[in-house]
Length: 196
Image (cartoon, rainbow, N blue to C red):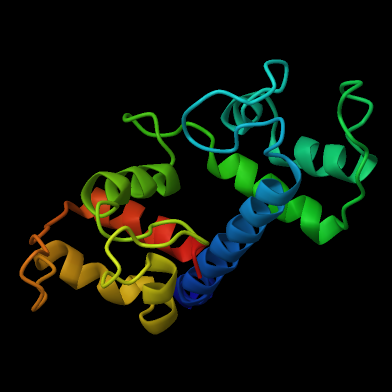
């Protein structure tokens, strides 16, 4: 009976985990959208590169220096107090949480030094960006190659796991066959979830 008491909450957690991961991916995607609209004039919000304004730290550095609750509080309090050039813009609590989730997704983790989402983005940039648009709002360099945001509208990213492991094969003769390792597949799926 004691085993049953512990097994049920664990089973419930396993059932809820995919929904929580999907909610987090949606929050990160919305946070990135908000950041791209409001922050990119001064800050770099990507995994690499410098900010357009020298005094504005890249978001990946902010992720190293603050925890998520500090960021939520900062967004809610207004950020104009942090730097004289910082505009004072109001966000709702859900928006503050989404922005914080996005910033924290840039936090360096793992032995390769990349968050899964950033690693997934890098893998797609290296292997797919010659033909496909891999970012929201971009056009594919190869007109017949569907943009990845369109692909995730048709296919749930987690449904692509097997194809990524075994090799994606299409009738298109220019499409090379790719196979990825388990960690790489998880990272690609984590990134694709942000495009939904």
